[in-house]
Length: 138
Image (cartoon, rainbow, N blue to C red; front, side):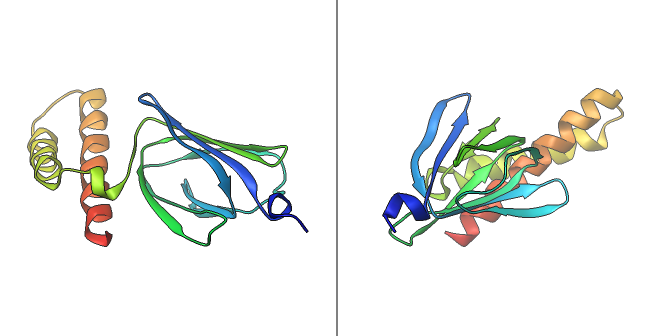
């Protein structure tokens, strides 16, 4: 069987542009109910993803780690497309800035604000914690 028979096309897109485009053997995404793994020739599906850790394996057997924001995954026609509000490699994350963002989010959560501001502060806190967690694994 050819290499393409054991792989699928993977495209990870964020507002900054295309984060990754190429072949993959597997991708693990943070779904709303836990981690979900997609392998080549997965059935067609669209799901939401949450802030967390995304891993994908390239045909050379190397696993790559990504700090991913919330978004969606579509798998169709042996193509996995991931749309996320953020996507960062561990080596691109500035730990000092992530720690500062964590502290700001914690402070905002303690202030009495509207529900919308509280929700935004919770998301900022989750993003900062995820970025720090990802850099600890690097």
